[in-house]
Image 1 (tube, rainbow, N blue to C red):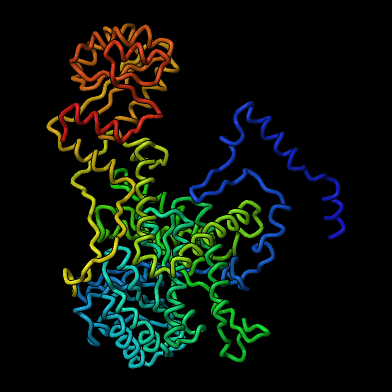
Image 2 (image 1 turned 60 degrees about the horizontal axis):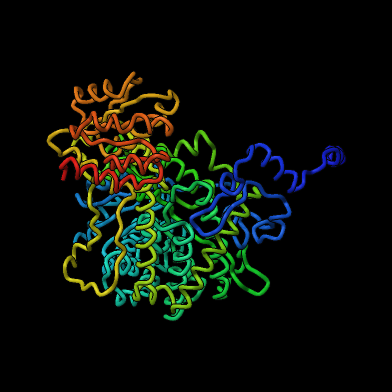
Length: 637
């Protein structure tokens, strides 16, 4: 059989890089190769449309195996199982949270995340919360006020002992991450870092419970690019490794107590590469601390006594809030589905899929939560993503993408270390400044439609209204200390990418009259249709009523039809050559009865401007800024 395969391959000569390039350029028919085929990523590097074996032969990822250091191909080698996690805010009491947990455990969930009010903490509360939940069959995760995390840990350990569990088999986490509050709230929480060692010791009897968290999903939800989230997450984790080992916690213990909560951005292949690169780089970082193998039969014990299983990165991935939208919110299901696919194929340990209605209903509904759960169950039960180990392995494109992203993230990691580490950089405000700048750039790009949000700045639902839906403001305050903490540090200021367009659209809805944009289509059939479609989408993004037309025999008839339709804006849609003939007569016919707009940027623009025509819309204008100006012209505030 092997001889047959060798003969088969020898019958076909492998095309050279030049031959591939020539074929592509021939198919492009004169179009620019660099513009059409090369992906210029937000991460600062470019990706070619094809790669050859020689491009990846020398990469560190090429010879790696699943389940082996540096774990780029995953921590597991026999399957790709992950926990289906759903978070529960236990603000309505322990009994209500317990009832919900028991319900969703019967609907496919095998990982629970409880957010517990600190003022409610007690042995009785924990007993009620976990009543009927078999802790050995499910991953349990807990979060409370950072100052009460040690208390929570002791209560949980005491409860498990009382119930007679085998503590060595229980899997879960407690979310302790004081540094996150510096980034998001500007609070000085450095004093809490001293509790890290005590927390690790409190959970010593739960070897599979992690308690020192790197909440890098905060960065993803603030608009960070993939390499930024990854680079900062590595520096964040390294800061905790430094803190713990300096406090006397052995490196192998410290590493096994750190958990990464990361976001999942919307760039499908980049996110697969991100999680692969994350495992590889974190493994290399932890190895430098020389974690010792304490178990004689450790399968990952190396000849020098090092324990490489301590180098495994444990990741909980959550779909990002940043690109969720209030309008056309069912499209959010498509966004979260591709994000969940990225994380699953990349081999993370658990996934949270946010409900599609998260922007305006943080509590969720039975329906939206069911859909979110089923999105993961679909990937497991029908797509069998849990059966395949690292499907990206061996793909020249993804191996190259992983290596390129890893290099960018590593450079960022080193720059943070040069500042003295993640804590120093956070206190100096460097990280916050970088993330805020990225967020501002992305909002500007969305305003100019350089970054698309389907249903928001591109192809909106023309007839949709908010129906009373309002974006909910996030509150990250610790209720037991609310208003008491000083805020000496810079903070991350962020909002969802769609928020600017949503605010504009909500502003339009509040107007006494819904503005009407009328398409005066005339002349060349193909061009008038194309420009009318562009213009309809353009104005519908601000919530305007748009009226398209098949075409008018004259501009006078078109203008009169617009006035009869009570149009506030008349958009002339024709070809560039014909604007010289139609634009000025149409403008004069409107005679100030509506705002006159030309769809396009014709060569005769200067002549049209000289005649008094001021408004032009085309792909190069700032859509958001232009729509705000139209609202001002129409007196919509």
